[in-house]
Picture 1 (cartoon, rainbow, N blue to C red):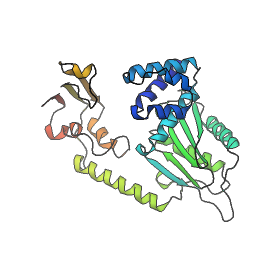
Picture 2: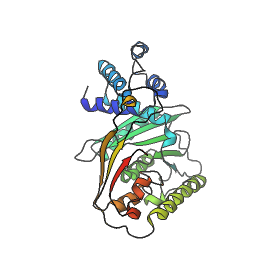
Picture 3: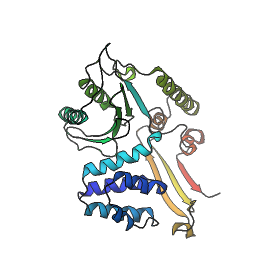
Picture 4: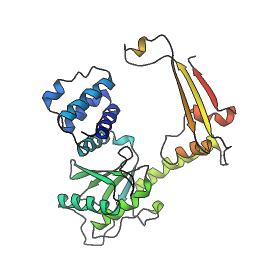
Length: 305
């Protein structure tokens, strides 16, 4: 097994809450029941992840298997993502049902790979004729980034496709064109991407309310003017480990944990201001970040009260 695949699986496992670990692994159905019974799920999560990765290596896990695990994790936590809803318009009498899903999968993948050399596409069938598609984007010169994928949930007998807000939003039009190719109806379009889309007005309203809230909160914190130029902010942490779980090595440690976190950018405050509107962070941002202009400092020391 390639080490990049092992690292990919490990990172995915570390994201899964312990309360859902067994449920997700059983849904993945890559490790047998006997293999799962040999695993000590009371271990620290890091050690548990290592044990599971070793079992995956024994089974000859592939990148596609790892991508399927990531899809299943996303299915269980889909409420944590932001989704754009696309509606395919059609002429009277036309049908959008793509009944031959195997042909659809093959063609969908080939079209993306022709348009963009380095891309991995993974499919997983779900309930109610739904299909989940995971796309890891690369470039002509870089391999696909497995940690910044886009997800699509498509119901074959409806005109709707749900696309997650990938950090690589420039590729969203390519996805829309791909659906257009498989649909005899008029193109998928989305106005705010410069495509001509028909979207469910109720969902637009819901998204617009959230976007207006984010914009309002961001303006209240940063104002509607250009931010002072600042290239970095540094945080020094000295605090005791806190956890809701009892026991553990770190919980028994008397000495405080010490670490240094540094944020840097050619224009840090403008970068922080753009995080929430871009969908990269929740609004409002942490006061530790937003207090920089009001405190007039970029060195912070965080200690227990």
